[in-house]
Length: 128
Image 1 (tube, rainbow, N blue to C red):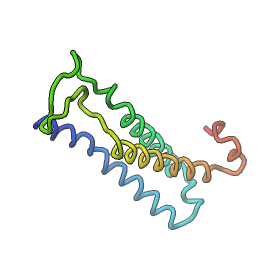
Image 2: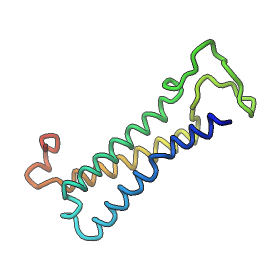
Image 3: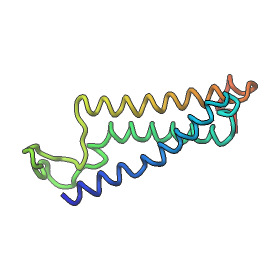
Image 4: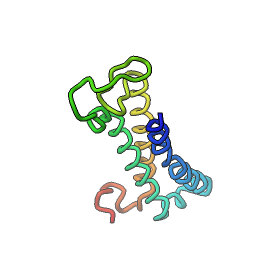
């Protein structure tokens, strides 16, 4: 039970950071697209892209990344389900998490690309 508390706390530890990034970007978006194009806002958008992609990949590959060493099945949880990994998302939960993280990453990537200077907007990977 203690492991579950620490695992959930660790997973939720990034929420204040992500929320503060979105708060700064939401505030900047009220001003103008030019404000969203500031270096700080572009970096925040890229950070949200990285965190969204990373989180979606984590959910998708959680059974592999958190596999419990030893022969499977290793243990049974309180619901009688056989556990082969510390975290394994299935079905609708897995799809919803991947969709949420992926769409947040896509939104941030779109805003980042839209706010690049005109001369590099067509080839964003050349921008420093």
